[in-house]
Amino acid sequence: MHTRAEIGYDSKIEGDIVHTRLDAAINWFRKYSMWPMPMGLACCAIELMAAGASRFDIARFGAEVMRFSPRQSDVMIVAGTVTYKMALAVRRIYDQMAEPKWVIAMGACASTGGMYRSYAVLQGVDRILPVDIYVAGCPPRPEALLDAFIKLQEKVSREPVQ
Amino acid sequence: MEFRGECTLKLADAERIAEICGFARKDMGFDYLVDISSVDNYGDDPRFTIVYHLYTHAQRCHLRIKTDVAEQKAEVPTVTDVWRTADWHEREIYDMMGIQFRGHPDLRRILMWEGYPYFPLRKDFPLAGKSSDVPEVAFTNTTPMMGGPFVTIAGGKDSIAREPRVRIPESDSISMTGRVERREDIKDAHGKAFGPGPIEKKP
Image (cartoon, rainbow over all chains, first blue to last red; front, side, top):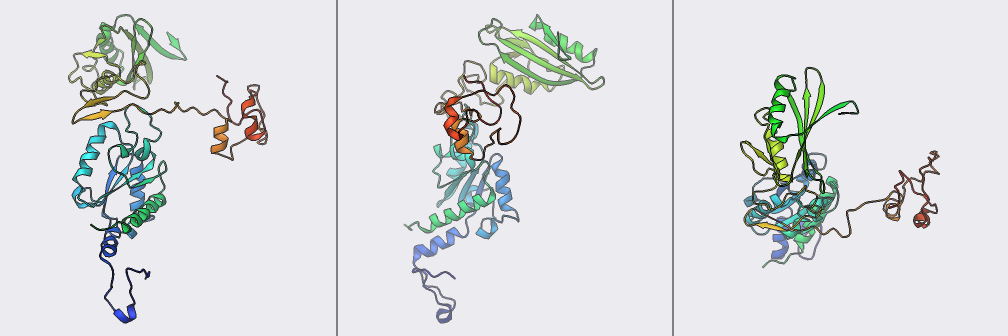
């Protein structure tokens, strides 16, 4: 049990009641149950599936619910090359996600266009979406994606609640 | 013409390609169209060349048929009624080069989107692309090339910096061929005037 100033908890004395601040509690709930919307476009999607499988379990972080429905998800993981043809569809799905929402740009192609400096590839999904975490790699190892997930959780825990 | 044991036919008249392909299929037995591809001879008079690769399963034999297409009248009869698979190959050639196929059942762009104004694989189309905008469908921008295309020369400073354990031929005890070229500009990288791997000619 980690001790933090917001969550001053002593299990012997207080039992099942935790005293904390509101934004710490809300961020705690949000970050430990981040449901991803996997925008799996290319090879990075295979590593995303590997991260969701049993060896590199993403369910440890509460993110095994990879429903392909934007209305029910918190974080969009853009895994793969975003072509110009697909860009408007990605943007439309991002707009359908409910607040609060975050974006992880997984891999070189989603971050910057990767090795495809050409007429048909969008040079980074951050040209159409606000990205929170970029993951380097081609493809990134599942552990790298989980590291990015942990960093996103830390980012979420720092967010102030309106 | 024979080339490396493969047979290439060069047709003088692009208009008869459907007839020739029909003959190839029915009478010579080339039942499998492997590929149709197109070449942009930018600067030569018949600007485009279309290449048909045929194969027969029965005799296990390949055949290549080439035709030239001029730029002004970039139109060729389709071979879709000979092999159904030519449908998408011809759509791709139309999309990338702009050659029309007369009699095609559904000639529209297959890789790029409707309304994209250019033909990307022509030689006068830049590698970085051009900006375009079809509202509600797609947009494109030119890619920042930053001095690319990114060519790495074996043994150059950047490859040594990127991969410190890159192989040096001398210490690998691989015998050097006469192609080793002395280059002074990479001497400071690892103390030798030649690099590892295949040596590229200095441009």
